[in-house]
Length: 150
Image 1 (cartoon, rainbow, N blue to C red):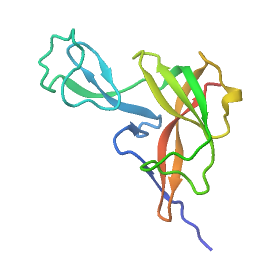
Image 2: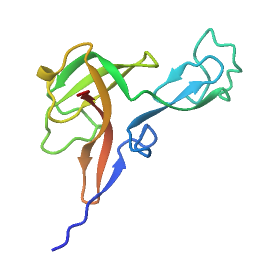
Image 3: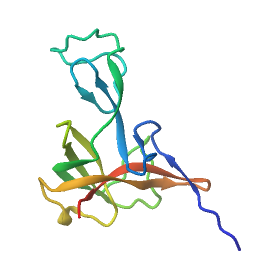
Image 4: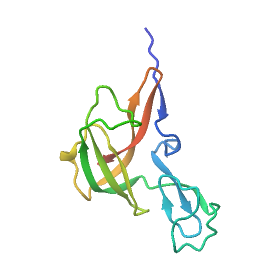
């Protein structure tokens, strides 16, 4: 009997990439003042001190840092409401708010399976990885996740 691997698709299109072999969050960055945004901002730079055109032309796609430090973390022990899609039966997971190294902004994400709040601490260095959020008969739907740097 031959089994074929399911295709892997991002659960949220355009929020991260794995094309280079590394997981990177995709946002935008103002070419005038350097302010980064995640998720993407395509309207105009929201930095009140920016002297750019403020018409959206100053915003370019930007791959954010792949590493940061834990700012906060918690267990998620209840099934989130729709539109969040989770496995059935629901499996508790850990989330972490991570301050990205270069951008100095905080991004929330799940922590990779196998890591619990007992394994984490504020200030710990973590990196992006890809993990399966849920699957159906045709595909595995993936998201970015944080894992401790070894």
